Image 1 (tube, rainbow over the protein chains, first blue to last red):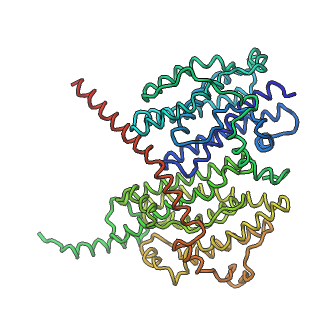
Image 2 (spheres, chains in turn blue, orange):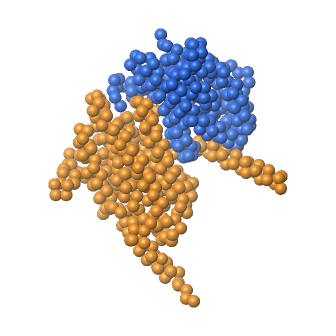
Amino acid sequence: MNTPLFEALLRLGDDRLVLGHRTSEWCGHAPILEEDIALANIALDHIGQANLLLGYAGTVEGAGRDQDALAYFRDAVEYRNALLCELPKGDFGVTIVRHFLHGVFSVLQWEALSQSTDPTIAGIAAKALKESKYHVRHCGEWVIRLGDGTDESHARAQAAVDQLWPYTGELFMQPADEASLVSAGVSADVSALEGAWRAQVSDVLRRATLTAPEGVWMQRGGREGRHTEHLGHMLAEMQIVARSHPGAQW
Amino acid sequence: MTTMSPVADDSARLAQFEARVAADESIEPKDWMPERYRSQLIRMMSQHAHSEVVGMLPEGNWITRAPSLRRKMILLAKVQDEGGHGLYIYCGTETLGVDRQELVQQLLDGKAKYSSIFNYPTLSWADMGAIGWLVDGAAIVNQTMLAKASYGPYARAMVRICKEENFHKRQGYEIMATLARGTPAQKAMAQESLNRWWWPSLMMFGPHDKDSSNSDELMKWGIKRKSNDELRQRFVNLTIAQVKAIDLTVPDPALRYDEATGNWITGPIDWDEFWRVVKGNGPCNRERIEARRRAHEDGAWVRAAAIAHAEKQQRNNRETTERQQ
């Protein structure tokens, strides 16, 4: 039986690993060279955060698994990321809107976790907070540009919001097994972040002349390992070399 | 008052320019320069920038399959650096009075060249090692020389870029060294990759001096300071020692050490292959340009949105200012 802290760290780490991986798929193919560099930077930040979080998860688990064992030798059903993170990268609009929606959540989460009573988590959160603030600024500006730009960019940005919105609710569903961690000040209650998230997201969407869908069913399952079909394909690619050479050093 | 005829004027300027180059002075964007110097620099610098950008593709091909998180991060950072180098050199080229969009369009139209090495496919993880070690290693040998080029903006760009390339080369060699001392399958992967990249890496220095059409002029104007063959020899000497240190071999049965010169002498390079790839028939020429075109076309709506938004902002700002007056 996994401990609540191990599970909580997987949720944090897997979000960043999967989202970082998806973003890294852009490398060399972005709309402009400047954006290629920016997206690589955002991907790098996420994978760097995952590296620290999964490394700590391995330590907490105490079963001899390091970050690479956790990243490369778990199957999709063992991943704990939110579904939002694993959806295919889509067009530039989907990529940017997703980073914005998840980034605003991340900033709020890191702000709360930088006060964690667990010093390792607090340290990682403080570092990640600076990175996520930059991601939100960068992607938020693009959301406005795309929403306000041309008819086509507006339509694509709105389609991205419509596609991704049903996956945002899961971010704020507080897992039951984290209650003791929250009361001990180790973890943060994500359900408490939703109000601030909505306010910030609504402000940018309004400036981008975009609208958030209302009354949609919020998809869920990622936190329990019930994923979309996309994650398995992503992991198949990500894990192929490592799994072809079990026990090898790289 | 005496007036110089334009011809005499130009020949005096040319003499002065060549004297400055001969005295190792740096030529700066606003200085007078012969048109041919300008066009040769634009050709070289834009080819260099294109090479950085196209060079993102073969390595980008393995970012999603890197076998550890550390390797994934290093590779992402490396490819990101290459994008940065491309941007930096495009900006440097713009100091010569040419627009980046125009240069990019030449690449997309298949009219501009880029380093032929990137027309080879990346087939295994070991290729990330071989490219960093050999391709970036060869580039460093070339760029260390270019860091002393007569055109200031290019030389300064090369100083900065060389520092990062050194990191790229080290990480590549470290990948190969790790594989070479790994499992038998890993070592075989490293050797197979070295076999494929060795000869194309030697070709990166261009044709033999006697067959290099641009070399004389570039040397005269201090854009290049060493010949293709000199640079290639330097690279071979440096690299053979590194190959031996990790217990791999180069695919060249004729390779021998020449006591008299202290040089490693390679067997003949297959120049037919070189020209075939340069002329567009390498394994990936079409795919590389196609990938760049697709990225450009798929991104058109994004660039249009950025321009439209900026224009709306300008208009709004202007209207606000007018209302205030």
